[in-house]
Length: 129
Image 1 (cartoon, rainbow, N blue to C red):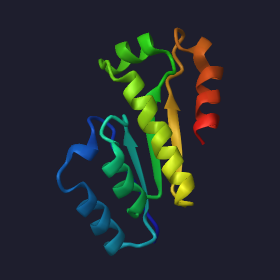
Image 2 (image 1 turned 90 degrees about the horizontal axis):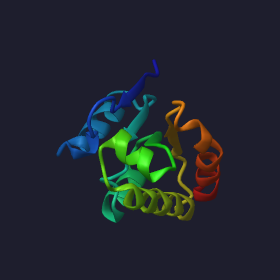
Image 3 (image 1 turned 60 degrees about the vertical axis):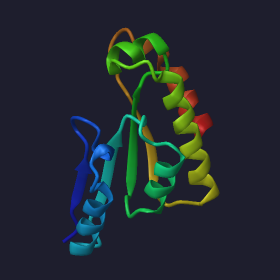
C-alpha cells in the first residue's frame, strides 16, 4: 500500500549525513511511497539542489514563511534571508530546466504581522515558478 512520509518537522533534515540513503531505503521498501521534505532552504546550494532534484523525493516545501526580511529574521532567527531567496530562485530554475516531476512549494506563516505580505509572497512564488 502507498504511504506518505513527511521528513522535517523540527530541525533541518538535510544536515543528516545519511539523508539520501534514507530516501533510497524508503523507496526501495515501497516504491509507491510519497516522500515530502520540508527545508528552510539554507542548505540547498547548487550541489544539494542537483542531488535533491535527482532523488526520489516527490515534494519539497521551502519553509520561507514570509517575504519580509525583518519578519524572516525574527521567525527563523537567521540573517540569511537574501541567501535563501536566491537559493529558492536557483532551485526553481533548475527544476524547470530539468523538467522535474517533483512538486515544489513554499510555506507561508499566516500570523497577523505577516498577513500584509501575503500577496507579495504569492507573487514571489509565482515568479520563481
